[in-house]
Image 1: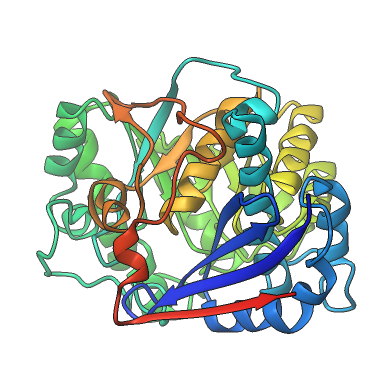
Image 2: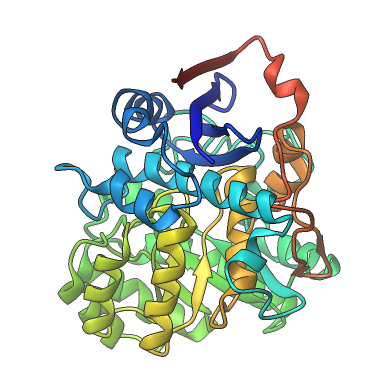
Length: 399
């Protein structure tokens, strides 16, 4: 079997999402995805990677994975090179599963569990939908374009949101109410009044539902170390499950100091890239939970190595999702195949909303649990409507 063409697709409406289709001479087409800088990633795929991959055997996944990042500027990052490699790698695993008539989780080693607990990332329908993905500016507060405007909800009535999630069987939620304050201060400091404002959502949740729901706290790497430690101390009485990206993920020493300052788990993070930064963090006991985005870190090939690395250090693994429907499906396959998976991120505003506009299937979520994807490969394809969109930008490189 040989790769005969590599195709990229993106739309104006979903400006950050890039889909990749890898065509073969056997007629099997693999589907992959990445997120952010879609135009730049597509250019790298066609200008650099297509010439290296077309004519190669798509089943030589490890060799091709190394080939794609064996470049001067592709060094353990989440930049264009790694995002391009991630999308193609996911497509290669899709081909492998389709050829063997097995789901990707089986190709990765098989199911480790029959169902997996999820948490709801409390985003709104149009969260990170534009190419301007700076925190706060893209929140679309006050809009009611979808049935699950959970970001607006946690900023206005977090207690009611927690009750609604529990009514739907979901007993874990991720929120980020300190982001607007970081935007006000540059993440350098916060006053007593600002601290009280940031704590309001947690106060409302605990008052409404007590300890019946776990709370993950996302900080989007917006704070410096002293401020992050100060916030952590004030949040500890609310018993969060983890603190995610409290500072920039570029200093294992600083994150280790942060981790020593709190009893709450530290989650780090989809921004790290390949396994090498994770090893640096693990070496210094800087993280408690290894979070990976398969669409940024090198795909399923690199993702399973990061999961194994975390297991070596006796740490849980928690795949990221707040990007696109194909990446979500890939994350679910990975989650089910790894013995140390703790929980799967999900965004109900997405999987009950715009994901369904674009793909033929989304993972089944019921009662706070996700269930294994069915069918060969990833078990998901782009809907025919996608190919007929007037805002579709499509490019193909072939022999």
